[in-house]
Image (cartoon, rainbow, N blue to C red; front, side, top):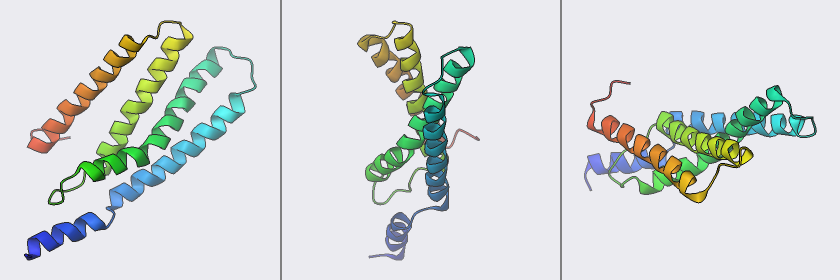
Length: 142
C-alpha cells in the first residue's frame, strides 16, 4: 500500500476539526431549541411567540440533524475521497430545518399537502446539488 493511500485512510479515520465544531454547534442549537420551545410551550400564542416558535423549531431541527447529515456524508464519501467540510454539513442541516419550518407554517395555514411538501423538498435538494457540484468542481470561491 502506498503512502498516499495510507494518508487518505488515516485522514478518513480521524475527525476533522471543522466536524468537531459542527457537532458542538449541533449541541448548542439543540439545547437552545429545546429550552426555548419548553419556555413558550404554555404561553398564549401571539405574533411574537409564533415567530419565536418557528425560529426555535429551526434551531432544534437543525441541531438534531447535524450528526445525522454528518454520518450520511461520511458513509457516502468514497474511501479514497475527502470528507465534506463542516460548513457543508451545517448548510445541509439548515436546509432540512428550513424545510420543516416551511411545512409547519403551511400546516398552520392548512395549506400543506404531500405534493407541496415533495416539491419544496425537491427544490432544496436541487439547490444543494447545484451548490455541491460547483464546490467540488472548484468554480465556487465561497
